[in-house]
Every structure is written in C-alpha cells, then in structure tokens.
Length: 128
Image 1 (cartoon, rainbow, N blue to C red):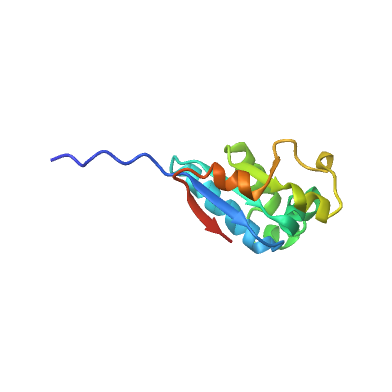
Image 2: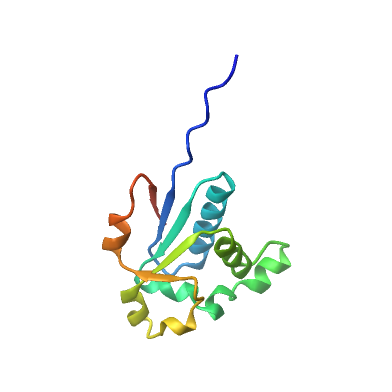
C-alpha cells in the first residue's frame, strides 16, 4: 500500500508588526523552517519594525546568543536571505525611522501592505 503523494508546500507570509527583536528572530526561524520543508517564505516588516533590518540592530543580541551557543540574529538573518526567504520592508517605515534604503542589505525589497495582500495568493498569513 502506498501513501498518497504529498501536497505541494503552501507558502508562508509573516508580518513582523513591531520592532521586537525576539519576535523578529521567531519570524526568521519560522521562515527558515518553512524553506527547509520545501515551501516558500517571505517576511514583511511593518513601519517601526524596519529598524530591525539595520545591520547594527541585527547584531545587537550577538553576545547573549553566542554565550548560550546559539546562532545570533544576524546569522539567522543571513541564513534566511541565503535560503531564499523574501524580505520586504515597509516604505513608510523607512521614512519613520529616518533611514535610507542604502543602509540596508540590497536583497531587501521595499513595498507596502496593499502590495503584500495583493500577492498573498494561497500563502498562510502569520502576524507576529
């Protein structure tokens, strides 16, 4: 007796709603788990959460996690980008934190909530 074929993996879209480093870390871990299972994942960072993508913000927890033998948020962020996790940051958030796009990893895309929802398709949507 054979098992039915596995369904094609559903995509996962995660909205990071606040500038909370722990929630961002969790979102990155969820996205990496989704890609490890063969699915697609993308993150959208809303307004103030965009600050979490700045290089100095991504590295802020390095000592604490390294001391525990865990990967830093910067390492998880790099792994997510390398794994093909699409990361989109809110254009309004860029203005809100007073930064320019040139300060961010060039693989980060810029957009808004309407575009995100228009392209949602069959993705599961998680807000964290």
